[in-house]
Length: 423
Picture 1 (cartoon, rainbow, N blue to C red):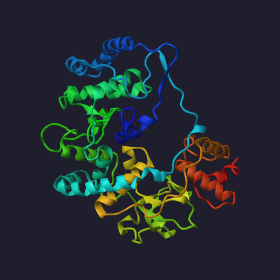
Picture 2 (tube, rainbow, N blue to C red):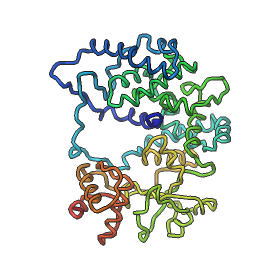
Picture 3 (cartoon, rainbow, N blue to C red):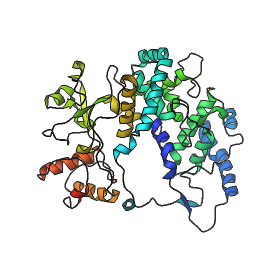
Picture 4 (cartoon, one colour):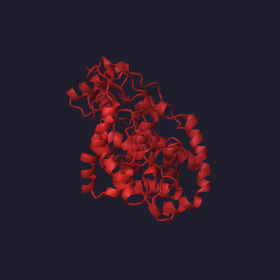
């Protein structure tokens, strides 16, 4: 579901953790914003600005009036920029550390989700079999996303979606994106799937048990229980099938999993990761890469493509992932999110536990230090991806390549000992 297709899990993830990090607002002038005046501007904006666009997009006047009956701005949402104010400048990167990837994997939470997931796998076994036949996505992957996004539909997601989307479309730092989502929500109402008061979502606008933004609902939500309504709020079959349909439409390859935790021997460089360096899994195995479980790779995977992934370089778990790993990232563009889903799915399906290799003592450098390292690598001709002080796979890969050329043992992860060397 970016722009017209913002990924469903992305905003849900933000909603779970970003309130403590959200950018607060600072008025341009010393005078406080008059909320009454802004509310008046908002009501005028609905009629003179939003309604013409909605009408042009095919939204009926009846649906528009119903959607905004009694709607006011929600002043409690984060990341708002009322008229007459400006966003507060983001905190300087020199003041921020990035945390170890291991912090993402709460064992207590994973164990709880896995236990619930196994119970629900039995409860909804018949539905999951039908969904798997229809879309080719394994039930454990669907369950893992369902659990991660909404606690298997148990999470309280109470916000009126129209109020949230309208507030953010009128006065946030991402007005254009939320405006598109608001128009999509009006189409949902106009189509008869939901009444305005039934559209409930997170404070970021993500709706229902799969946490779909409205544009994704229109594209990927399905009526799987046959009642004529795509109900991702109350229907488990519709929710499970909608998640599966999203993944299949994004390119899920039936018959394959997400990936394997592996052990990469020292003679194999860690600077080979990334979706652009895919190789047949048989070639990775021939190079000496083995599954950490001691099992061999399935014979059917020998000629199938796989990619190296080392999210903490040589300081943590190592993986060979399939293209399906990157399909999971379509739900939320984060390697750690996709690994969380993969690990949770394996716990549900096979009773697995944590990744066998521990996460090392990494992630304590200042972002400004990593940023300086990225700039130094760019100056030397390396492609580090986004220069943002965070070590994505291109930064890790480039660092490993530089370490190799400099006569150092590649670790493929920034650490304080490399800072002085890389200038």
